[in-house]
Length: 213
Image 1 (cartoon, one colour):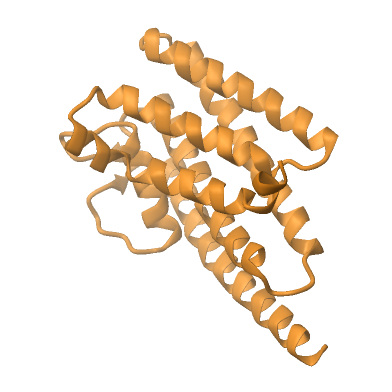
Image 2 (spheres, one colour):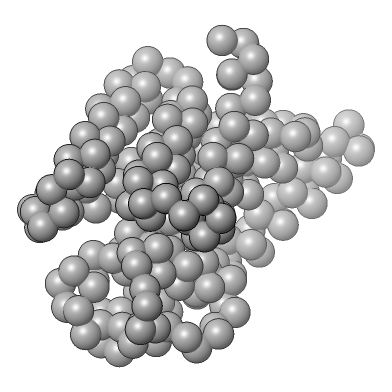
């Protein structure tokens, strides 16, 4: 248990990167894409749940995590159930927002620059990208004409576009068409830039304080 507590940020970080590499696994293994997505997303939730440290945080995190996992696996066997998709998206949004809140609360308590303080903000940035992907998927579910998408695509494209948005790269292969899609894209662009600026500022401040202590 001490090992998991000590390396919880690293374990969660590896699980998220593993999820982001899902298309590579699909191309290399040739297995059912939905099966690989479900497994990798499950690993993200299980690994990220290690972040919860207090009893109250664990109850909320495990409850939300259980709902998301149940929805994911049920959705895998009942693809056409639209209500199930909405429950999965809503609970996923709350779960990853909860992860972000837990991260911020824990990082604020860290006084010295260490490995946790480096991995924590990086993990938070990845969670922000996943939250954006969830929001884009919700928008698309409401209106399939919200985005101009490549011909051969999957639900992964919304998470790809989310990370492209928060890093303000903008390749142009995915284009938001409706006002809702454009608004969320713009907000993610702004949040992504402010996030990086704030993290760099806090990191430099703590580094200077640790050197002068």
